[in-house]
Length: 537
Image (cartoon, rainbow, N blue to C red):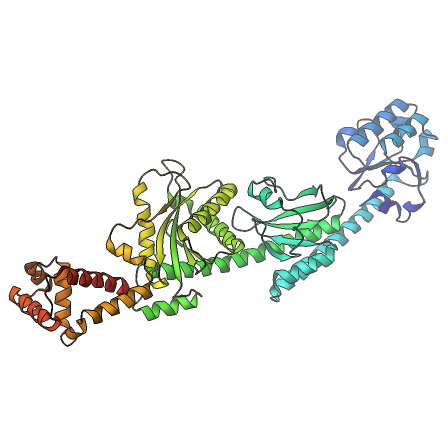
């Protein structure tokens, strides 16, 4: 409670202020009495002192020193009975009090110090009780917003009304969650401060800063969750130490916001786990059919016919004893960070985790002409921002373009293989692109529609439909080509007699009216075989 407020209450409104009028803004937290000269060691900041002044009688230099020491301790004031022993205060004492802006207030002779202390403490306690009741009511109101399903938006709106100040809640990366979304638009440097850890001091409950250009103050409060990085509540303006009501309101708001954010994080974690299980089952090919897989992908709003690039990220080991098993928390933090960055960058991308890996499925659209340079610049930007926030480095293996979601499992294998040339120690924050080493890998670079069209044309051109009456002929022909035109090896793979293979191949030559030893025919057949494997895979 401020001293001016205290002096406005009866019966203290009739008291005479002898000196230190400019110090009436002081806070009063406690009241104490003095009857001995060694009171200073027992005084604290914002203490109000009651005294008869007996030990100060005829010792103006002692009184002057007392005023100076109490002012340096940020005590509130002295209430003194001048008529009892002193009668009049020395001029040097009054001048020192005015100079130090330390109030000296005269008490009437007939007032008891004990009764005066009880009255003062009653007023202070009543004020504190009123503030606590207000805080409890505020907490109920905030909790009611959440329990009734109104969410953070309604809570932040109510907080704005109670404080009569603009407020905004952001995540650790300064992305708005609720509140006045444009409150920080004039502070372009605020994100950089958060990146380098300068926005909140370690273990701080609040930080106040001023924008030099706009001359506007802001106060920041951490809203703690399960992660090391808390959300941030920004309030326009500085909240003074004496503004107990605003501080109690903000304290209750931060508590309720923390619980609500914990609840939202728990829901997000459950959703994330379900998504990761779905993707892990897809990579392990645990689904019984493409139709089932397509239905599951649609449940998670993932276009099946979309082209994707699969990027597999792994945290770079920090030392020889470093292992992924003991760094699940860092992996969760990286996931949250990348999820936020993907939203802010506006790049269509899906994020998953599998073991110690982070998997990005980057959607490729028709406007992306140079896919590899685009992926490289995009992933480098993520690596740079990640290293600023968490001082961790992430390396990526990147696949070729997957023609559809159903082909992503092959892209995942390519991205993993991209790490192999750099097995063992690798340069931190590296990006490795998969390099094609066989004809199948080269064919996967061609869109699936083009491959299907080529396969159909080859099938008709070579009149392979002539073999449809007997599926064993087509299967034998394909296996014969796969076995480098070796009849014995073909018979072994088909578990048939060698003569059976010879008979079937002669039947193929008869129906197709071509020699199976024709190099051009052999090349076309083997290419068509590879394409069919890719399409069916």
